[in-house]
Structures are given as structure tokens and as C-alpha cells.
Amino acid sequence: MTGPGWLSVVTAVAGKDLRIEFRTRSRSLTMAGFVVLVGVLFNFSIDQALVRPQDIASGLTWITLILSGLIGVGRTFAIEKEDGALAGLLLTPAPRDAIYVGKVLANFLLVYAIVLLTIGVFGLFFRLDYGNHPGALLGILAAGTLGFVALATLFGALTASTTLGESLLPILLFPLLVPMVVYGASASGRLLAGRPVAEVAGQGRMLAAFAVLAVGAGAALFGQIVEE
Amino acid sequence: MKARTGWLGITLAVLGAMASVGTLWMVFFWVPTERTMGVVQRIFYIHVPSAWVAFLAFGIVAVASGVYLWLGDERADMAAQAAAEGGLLFTVIVLTTGPLWGKIAWGTYWTWEPRLTLTLILGFIYVGYMMVRSAAASPEQGKRFAAVVGIVGALFIPLIHMSVYWFRGLHPDPVILNPEGPTADWEIQATLYAGLLAFTLLFLGLMTLRYGVERARHVLELREAA
Amino acid sequence: MIRRTLASCLFGLALVALAGAWDGLAAQNANLGAQRLGRPYLFVFLAYAIGWGLILGWIVSIARRLRSLERRIDRD
Picture 1 (cartoon, rainbow over the protein chains, first blue to last red):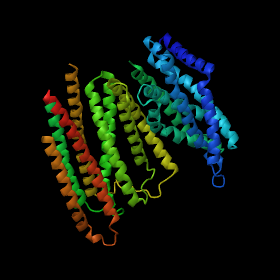
Picture 2: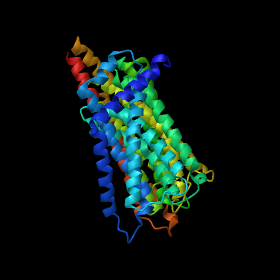
Picture 3: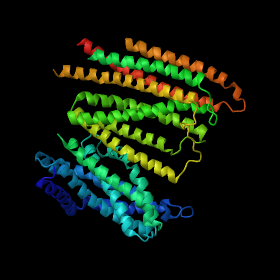
Picture 4: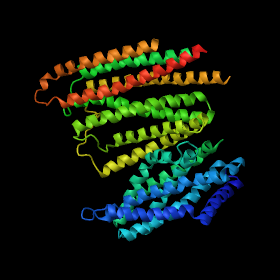
């Protein structure tokens, strides 16, 4: 598993996905447009006489992460089907877990960039104060994004070859995202409210556990999904 | 083979049905009414055994899915499929009896009570498990995909459990009742254990019969292929 | 055949138990007086009726599928 080829497969798969994305910008542009427009709609959905936007911005950020991530990750295997690159890669003895980790890495970089855009746009729209610990906020979001991307990539590969396609993805994915939303929204909400980092250490650890479990399960089971 | 699983299933189901009749008698004619909650507490004797069976079934799904992916044994997949169908059924029972109890005991049909929340999520995982199986391009693929969903679901259930308990810590329920606490009368405990035994036997029996359905389908497919 | 008999036996037993249970519960709780009866009773019976209805439905559906499959196996 950890032979000399492993890391090079990871970087090759991640590099290929990122190069395609960089060239076409198909996913990043749709996702970026999506989060800005969602921010606009969220703004009009809030009656500011009843609730301050800052109070619910944390939860909205996580929901936006999930929805925009679905757009991005859901497409990745559809693209693979069109150009047949994955099928070609699967004919080689490349370790399946390395292919999976490479896909997760590329998707993570893409979705995390969109998450940063989201938090920036929401900061502007909802006048967020990033508190005294922006680093902790970025770390919390990174852990949540990694866990999300790991599960979405696994189930995205699975649903891409079913007759229902991407519409099945939320049904498989959302029940498992409960821990991410519970711990993530609480942690980022507290940080945005200016609470100390010590108060969110427990949530951070649970998010890290969520991410590790998701990547581990995906790496172990990905081979079963792409097997012909 | 067919006859053996048939008789095993029927024996277990009949034992379970007999124990169920005994439990129903205990619930409605024997066990005293619980003092603080009153009559509605009797829902407990169908609610809790159903919840136990729902989670037992999911454990069976996860283990059988693992065995199927590991050894490729068709029988493991059939067992997982049989357990998932029964598990979903008992999850639905939990999710209908729980709110009926909650309406009387707490004044609301739905609360984010952690165990009820966890059962709801479990139900969604079961639904996904079944949809994946039926939406796959080929039966072989459906078996593998369903097994993956079953295993990943089981891996995440403990984390989901922790998170919904932790979330409840932030938003406590207005009334917290602990009916299975050590203060419960022995008649209440005996009735609960009878219910647990009855539903476990009944579920295992019906699951075996449901397995027999897959078995028969498999035999028929082999014969038609030949 | 044996499965159909089994299913109808179970169904009959459950009906008898449900019918008898209302009387039993009312008799046993006659001394509760002050407690408001009515809706809690209805909900208890609803819970058991729905639960057992679903279980009996599952039994019938298993029996039906098994019977049709075995008929097809025997026919060939």
C-alpha cells in the first residue's frame, strides 16, 4: 500500500483533476457563483427586525458548504465518465486507495477555496466579525470540509454509476453529515461570537475524528465501488 | 436447504409470536400503571423492543455487509438484505410509537430527543441502503454498493450518537423522564424484558423467512441461467 | 400453505388480544379515578395497532413472495 508508487498516484490523480479544473474552471465558477447568490438570497430571507444575520451566519455557512460541495463533488465523476480518464487509470494496477486520496485531495482544495470565498462573502454581506482567532475558524472549516469531501467523493463515485445518478447523493450523504453540522456550526458560531478557542476545542477534536473516519472509510471501501 | 431455513424461521417466528402474545397479556392485564406517566407509559413496551431490534438489525446489516465484501458469499448479502428490510420496518414502528408517547408525556409529537433523533437518522440510512441496491446498474453492483453504504453507516452511527447527545446538552428538553431508571418496579422491568425477548425472536424468525425469499429467488435465477 | 395458516393465526391472535386488552386495561385502572383517561388510552392502542399492523403486513408480504417463488420453482 505504501510502496513508492502510492504517493505518486495520489499526486498524479490530484494534479490531473486540478489541471482540468484550472483549464476549464467549470466547477469553480459555478460554485463561486452559487455561494454569492445563496448569500444574496439568505440576506433577503432574514427579517432583521427579528434576528441578527450574524447570529445565524455560522449555520448558513455550513449549509452553503454542503450545497456548493454537492455541486462540485457531484460533478467530478461525471467528468471522469465523459473523458474516460478514471476508467483508464483503473486498468492499471494503481492502488485504489491512492486514487481515492488523490481525488479527495483535489476536491478538498477546490471546496475549501469555495468555503473561504463563502466566509468572505458572508462576512461582507452579514457584517461578520471574525473574532480574535481567525486561524481556529479556518482550522474548524478545514476539518469539516475534509470530512465532507471524503464522504461526498466516496458516495459520488457510487451514485455516478447508479440509474438515479447525483440525485441519490444527498440521500446517502446528509444523514452522515449530522456530526459535522452539530460540531462545526457550534464551533464556528462560537468563534464568530468572539468566544475563546478553549471553548471549541472539543468540537474541533470531534470534527477531526469525523474527517479521519471519513477518509479512512473511503480509502478502505473505494476499491469496492470502482471495481468492474 | 430450503426446508431447513423454512423450519428454522417458522420455529423462531412462532416462538416470537407466542412470547409476543404473552407480552401483550402482561402489558394490558398484568403490569401496574406507571405512577408518574400513567397509562401512556405502556407504549414503552413496544417502543423500546422495536428500537432494540432496529439497531440489532443494523448491526446484522453491517456485519453481513462486511462478510459479503470480504468473502463474496451471496448468503451474507441475502442476510444483510433481509435484516435491512426488517430493520427499516422496526425503525418505522419506533418513529410512530415515539411521537404518540411524546405527545402525552411531553406535550409534543416531536422533540429532538437524542435516541429518537438517532433512530430517525438510522431510518434514513436504511432508506439509502435500499435505494442504492435498487438503483444500481446490475444486481452484483447493487450488492457491493449496498454493502458499502451499510458499513459506512455503521461506522458513523457512534459519532452521530455522540453528536446528537451533545446537541441535546445545548438544548435540554423541557421534561426529562428516565423510565428505564433503576427505580422502575420489577413488574415493569419483567414486561420490558419479555417484550425484548419476544421481538428479538420474532425478528430473527421473520428475518430468516425473508432470507428464504432471497434464497428461493437465487435458486430460480440459477435455474433460469442454466 | 403452512405460511398462510401461520399468518392468519397470528392475525387472529392479535385481534383477540387487542379487543380483550381494552377491557383489561380499563378494569385494572378503575382505581385511578383522578387520572384523566381517554387520549392516553387511545394513543396506547394506536401505538400497538400501528406497530402490530406493520409487523403483520411484513409477515403477509414475506409469505406472499415466498409462495409465488416456490410455486414458480415447483412449476419448472
